[in-house]
Image (cartoon, rainbow, N blue to C red; front, side, top):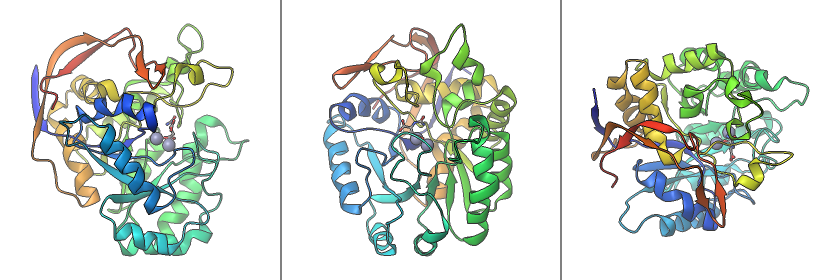
Length: 346
Ligand SMILES: NC(=O)N[C@@H](CC(=O)O)C(=O)O
Ligand SMILES: [Zn+2]
Ligand SMILES: [Zn+2]
């Protein structure tokens, strides 16, 4: 198959940043996705409904004029988030979810939470209103091996949370391991997961090919090949529990190529095309639409998109760098080819 038309997809996990950086990256997502769940890990984080609505206005102002791209906003959960704030989320359709960052687990997670038990009233309010909890699922004990942190978080805090709040809708974000795939499959209908294009395409060797490669450093960190294969199997299986979330996470070259380079891979410039490569390689292009366009809205209780998008097999070369505010970023596949192209950017 050299041409594929599917219902327009949505990105259920996206970092748009803010200001001039937001203006640089939003068009790439808007050209591919009808909607995106926008992560709240700005500096300072988006911790109130009022902050989220103001951020949404900045995104709407930054998107291309002809675009109907719709940002779906999220609230950053802290130890002081109140059940009253959750009631405000429930009353505000522009907000669709609450994001849980274990404190210190990833970029701008310092204001996140250290223990889940004190937040029980917040989780109860979320469950009552069917507001999904989006989870960065990694343990934060510095003595935990970085490659084991997802499995540790799942086996400990997440399994306890799942058991204590069976009605709470949980999306385990950017899953990277066979352990996560198995856990999500077994966890009942209120549990789902997003999967990134980079975790489907790459294993941890990418970080060390011929030297150390900061462009492939993200969190959760890339894992062994057997985990990548488990993710491809889950994404292409047709299971409604798995859906598209790019975790496109732009950082300027100065922050990536540094003595302490930060975590995040930018994929928004070719996001759907990269997923198409994965599904094509797996002989499962007929299942891309479910993963990219159906399972996400179904889990969130939103309507599926009516418009379509067409992918064509027509290789193109990704630029070495892209503008990012007044700096540059290095996109995934920089200087290399992507096999699929979007035929009709809207
Ligand atoms: N994925 C990443 O490596 N980085 C994300 C944060 C996150 O999603 O954990 C970022 O905001 O840069
Ligand atoms: Zn994360
Ligand atoms: Zn993310």
